[in-house]
Length: 100
Image (cartoon, rainbow, N blue to C red; front, side):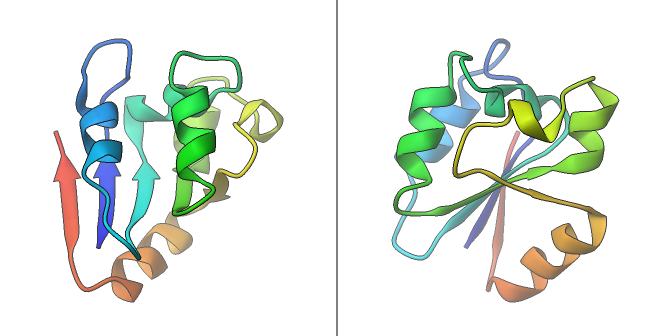
C-alpha cells in the first residue's frame, strides 16, 4: 500500500498516525504541506529517518520547491520524486491510502 500524507506535522497529527499504521511492504509519500515534515532537523525528522530504515519514504519534489525547501534539506533516506514518479508509485502499489 502507498500511504500519502498532505498535512504539515505542525498542523495535524496525520503523519505520526500514518507512520504508526504502516505494514510490511508499505510506502509513504509526503505531498503538499506534509513535505515540511521531511526537513532535516524538524519535529518529524527522527520518525521519518527511522521509518526509512524499513519502508520506502518519498517526498514530492515540486511541493518541496514550492515551499522553498531544497532536496539537500531533506531527511537522509527520504527519496525525492517528481510527478511522473508519483504516478509510478501509485501504479506500483495495490492500493493508496490518503491521510487527510
